[in-house]
Image 1 (cartoon, rainbow, N blue to C red):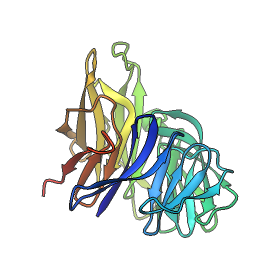
Image 2 (image 1 turned 180 degrees about the vertical axis):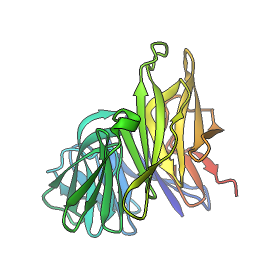
Image 3 (image 1 turned 60 degrees about the horizontal axis):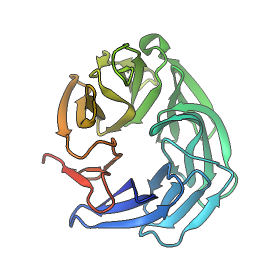
Length: 285
């Protein structure tokens, strides 16, 4: 019944939780260091602040350092089968990263590099880790670390970000249009994992010219992105894209100048516009 979200306020990086049933908000973690990533399990909240990886109880109590061997985890983290998986970043842009996947035990310890490249985010399903890097989709059996590669660079010109969700890879690439101050127009191509282990490709979808570069999310089969009005970077809109038909729906356009991070709950979307008064967008039902 909670949505955990990340925000920045008065010089501090905060992780808060929002109760969907009551609308109550509680700050559960605060740090002067940049909070790059976090993930929530039934037992714990796991956080990277760029200096180390910590665990705290779901209400913010009981902070414990798990490792300093992982200097930063960015893009995303996830817990699976007693291990915490994250990204050792190579380069970062806004809230997406490229790097190498690594893991540590949920109880702490030495970080283990998996030598698997990732750009954007990754997904673990039934013991298989799906990622993508430099135009290659990868499927890795975690029990053996055997990796199968699928080359998609010919379709999408080596996408800069691949977002994984529910067996679909959302591959995004950009080109410089010479007009926008943001300098690029994203193109989306979706790849659905088939039962035989291969991928089927959707037709490419071109996003609007002034889509904000690097700030994308996927959830329940939809892609979420921000746009800004030409020459008005403070006039920002949040959109939901349906990859099945390429249509976009406007969700919000007030108070979004900083392209705040999105978090998803069972009944709606939370836009991290502030610690005390986040914007909550309930599902249509």
